Every structure is written in structure tokens, then in C-alpha cells.
Length: 320
Length: 320
Image 1: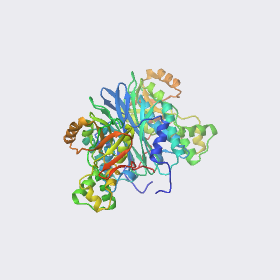
Image 2: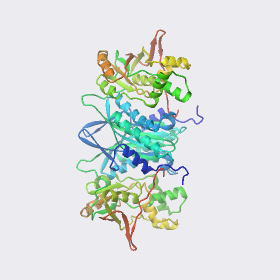
Image 3: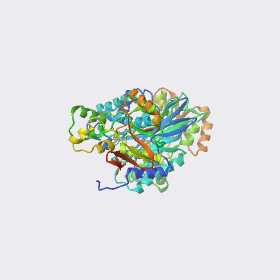
Image 4: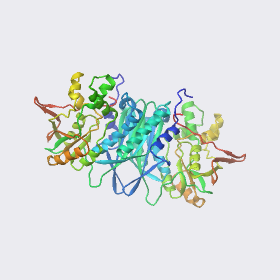
């Protein structure tokens, strides 16, 4: 797509990780200081790739906090403190900066965190890097990407398809019914991380990840980390997504599996914990659903009336 | 200078700080998790403003770690862990990325820290945001910007003038003797934070700051935070700086007081601790020197054979 072919994001991560001797991956880092473990996460929001047209500055600032909150939530880690580093283009007016500040304040209240500092710089485009510190709650545990066992149920914290639909509406003028349109656009501009659900789920989940890189990619990462075959029997298709796909000649699978930035939690749980987990879902206002099961083997497959077929894992890659 | 006049960096910081209810400033944030205090700092390096021509990718990556290490060092905080968020332009080759990775590895060894994670993104220019976690050493203390008392000595961890000279040589072809030239360029490409000195100084300093925003600016911030008048009696002029200034028709004060990114520590100490502090300086390979004294009053003044005159506090400001 780009004449200037260079090294892709995953290769960059490989090169840097191998240099600093980092061999295993998870979505949040645990480090020990004195006798306690703290969790760290940084996430950089870049205007050119992460900010769709129509997003207000305060929504951009809020989103820069949503991303690491979602990662921490998926691991059972309560976010406590954040630092925000900004690169701002020259010539912004005070109103823009006030809106950014309002977004940070809103995120503080919404997720009960404290932004304790930051750094301000001049750059060619708006960039907000959020670095977050959190802790696993007492009596709970840090949930890894790996850990799924044969027979575990695969669960998502809510339906998929709205976010990519919202982008198609905002950026390409796709047609949609008013109710669906509002919900789809809202999922892009005001993403909701599943903080309360994630914190309570941690006691039961055998593995988790947030879905911010796309559902298919997330399922592949988890299947791979656990060394298990994931079979998806029910696609978590959001209400109205099928009709939206039909009206705009789009693929449902593309909307559901290959979007990203949905900030839902994907988890595996033991069968006997299903009732507890569904109670947690109701209690925290989620709409969690079982989408499949963990089996011996490798890979991610979709099973429906036509049989079993592989679900490809590709998703968005920066720099590629 | 720029037709597109917008809000300046200091105003941005004011707006955001007041929104998140942050009233006091220091250079590193202390937060409490369970019963222990940890120190957090983030620092964003932006290619367009922080990377002079002639800097290798590994030196850029190293510098992105030097900045927060220097801030922590000046507060008596030992840096332990870092996360690095990258924005990389498209089309970079593997060699460039390998060089970046080498710089991170080198910084890990040089400062005895562990880079535990990061985030990789696509952006219009190279940006590295380093977020660091550290701890005040047992038996030591966190040193603030404020705390200077009447009669305290004002100290810097080394002489000034090399960094701005180095930039003049690299960017404007200024003339310099070979030895001075090498030292000046080295101070730009391979800045040395005063980590060991800072950690040992913390037991004696009444206030400290690192000088990365320029010596004059730093002295003003400290004088202001302590509510004291700082009188500078000896300018910390690096060897060869006077001759370089003469040969290139530059102002010595400009080279010494208004450069920035020297990563020296500026501190106030009680008179009775002078011997201990000078021992620490020798022990850690610094060339610390007393440059003045703290008095009742406000402002920063230079006192020499011509009398006392105000030292203006302006320095570099992003976005202005």
C-alpha cells in the first residue's frame, strides 16, 4: 500500500524485546518493589492512526486513558495512577487544550484514578502517551493470556461489530438506522472499558485479554499462549450488525472479528463458574456471552452449520 | 517567530494541572501503593525538537532514558523500571530499529534499570516516551525543589556551557579547538545524568532540581519554590567555554545559563555539609562546585566585580 516499505510493528517489537532480554509477553507488566507487586502499562494514542474524524479533544484525551484501563481491567488489575505525556502541534488555541484537560478529568472520575503528572512537548501531530500504575486487588489474582484448559468456555464481555460499523459511518458515510447509528458512533467516540467486570472476573478466569487489537487477533494470541485449540460456536454479533452489513454490502465476520478498539474482555472460564460469571456480568451492566470452547490442539476455528473452518488471525498492524 | 500563534507550553501545563486538581509541582511524582511510596516520572523525546543532527538512533534511544534518570537522580530516587512508548515513521529499516534497541540495552546497563515493556505505534516523526518507576533508597530521602534556607550554599554537579557550544558546532558550524569540540559534541550526543552523585547527595541537600531546562530557569524555579533570593557569585563556566565564546562572538552567559539538557544537578546544601558533599563529588567522578548562596528575599541575582544584577529566568519553551 505504501511505496516506502519498512519494518512492521511486530518486527519492531521482536527486535526491541530481544535486545532488552524480554521473552514472555503479557498485556500489563508486573514489577516488584520492596515486597509488593505493582502493575505498569503504557499506551500511546497517535492522532494520525487512532483518532477518527468527529472526535472531540476531550474524547481523545479520555480515549488515551481508556486503552490502558481496559488492559489492566482484563488482567484483574485496578488502575490507580496515571502520567500523561503530550505532544501537541503548534498553534492550538486554549479551548482545545481546555477540552483535552476536561477529558483527563472525566477519565479520572469515570475510572476512579488519579493523574499525577505528565510531560508537555511540541510535535507534528497530537500524541498522548498514558502510563498507568495499578495493583491486583487483595484476594484476587493477575490473569494471564495463557492458562486456558481443555473444556473451558470462551467468553466475551459484550457483543462485537459496532466499532467498525461506527468507523464506516463516520469515515465512509455508511448507511444505518438512527438507533444503530447512535450506538455504533458512540462505541467509537466513547469506548467503555469493562473495568468492574474485569476486576470481578479475575477470580474465575483461566486466561484473559482485552480485545483492543481485534477479536480474531485476541483469540489467536490466547489460543497460542495456552497451546490450545479455540473453537467458536456462536459469533458475538451485536444487535443490528447483520442488517448494517447487508445494507452496506459488508462482511459480518469483518465487522465482528477484524475491527479492534472494542475494549471488550475475552476470557476463558471453567464450566462450573458459568453462573458466577453471568451474575457478575449482570451486576456490572455487561452483556457477556459464551462464544465457544477450548479443545486440545492449536489454532482458532469457527464451527457452524457448514462445518469447521479456520478463523484467520490477522488484524491491524502499525507501520506495515 | 511562527505565524501560527497558539497556547504555550507553560499555559498548557497550567490548564491541565488545574483541571486534574494538581496544585504543587515537583520533578518526579511520589505515589503511595499499599504502605510504600514509589516515584514515577515520564519524559517524552520528540525528534523535531530534541534530536540534533548527527545523533545516532541508539544515542536517541539512550537519551530518552537519560532524561527521566536525571530527574530521579536529582531527587534522590533510584530508577528501577522503565516502559518505553514509541512512535515511528513508516519506512524505517531494520538497522535503524536495531540501533534504537541497542540504545535501550545500553541505557539499561549504564543505569542499572530494567525496561519491562512499551508500546509501538506509527507516527509522523520519531517519538520516545519513557515512563520510569523508582524508589527513594532506604535511609535516604526525597529531595524537593523547595527547602533552601538562608545561608545555604548553592551547588552544581559540574560546569556548564558545553551543551550549547556542542549544538552551535553541530548545527551552525561554530569553530572550536579539537579537545573542546570533542567534549562539547559529546555532551550533546552522550549526556551523562549524575545518578550516583544525586543518590548520595540526597542525604545532605536541602533542595534540588536537575538542570535540563537550563541553569537560569532551574535557579529561578528553586528560588521561587523556596521563597528565597539566590545570589550567584561564581559562574560555573566549563573549561574552554570562554575561548569558544570569544572565537564565535557568543555570550558566555548565554552558553552557561540558557542552554538546557546539561543534566547536571543544582542543589542547595547547608554550609556544614560542604566537605561531605565534595567527597561525594570526587567519589562519583563529578566536578561539583559552589556557585553562590541563599539569602532572604526573592529572585536570582549575579554578583561580580560590577555589583549585583538580576539573572533573567527565561529558557526554552515548547509551543511558544
